[in-house]
Image (tube, rainbow, N blue to C red; front, side, top):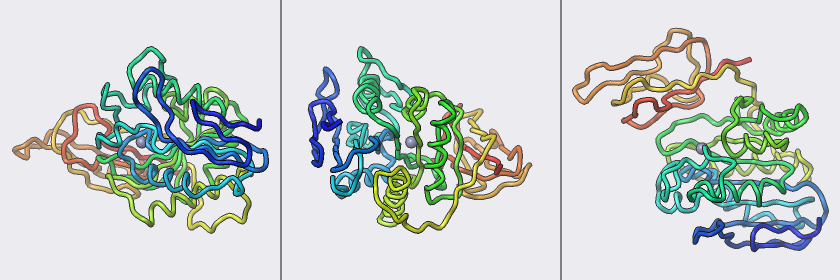
Length: 317
Ligand SMILES: [Zn+2]
């Protein structure tokens, strides 16, 4: 396993290579860094910017790509920073501008499809298929407010779920969630039997030094936990607890959205979560919590479409 190769980029053992990988049959490229450690070990894939305006994850990936050197790791790192470069440059939240598709909803992709399908296909067949572990760094889109938390794959082998959960528990945040989904880059990776996690930190188009430093600490600790970097682990504030029975609340109507609670808040059964009103302030819909729980994220945009996700909350186990 001496040579690490992705598309036209390659890194010999003990070297680092940075450059652009072209998405098949297109002029779209992905900025990629390959770090091939001096010692052999696991291969870890790290992506930022599957969602194009989740800046905390993107900047963290950019800084990790610059800072981590072959002598720092035992094993190999593939870092995409960001995966959806076109969406990032167009400042279009969540989608690949050329086809309007949410990249995280088209995995495993299609080599004969539109650009989003091709990026996903390439991510699976060039990046994921080499990985022993996958870390996907998100961070609440421009229209979402969230509290930091982490998903670990739930639809995979028992062993992969356990490995993913143990790694997720290293993130410095209060909550983690076993994913029941089969869509998304990391969930597809899990379906193939590879442990993977999706981290959420930052939101609403904001990134700053503090958020990125916390995010880098999360990744460093996970790489130490996985045996790629040497310890000791950097000190953390929180120990993540599992949240279960998540409710992803969608709007019944389009309108102006007025939330009553924030991400990270605890809510009681029956407590008002928010309401939707029209342009004349007439009440269109009102939402209440179904159980005592914790808000992971909510829409922060003033406008919400019908059937759009406005709230996500879960129950401490
Ligand atoms: Zn995201």
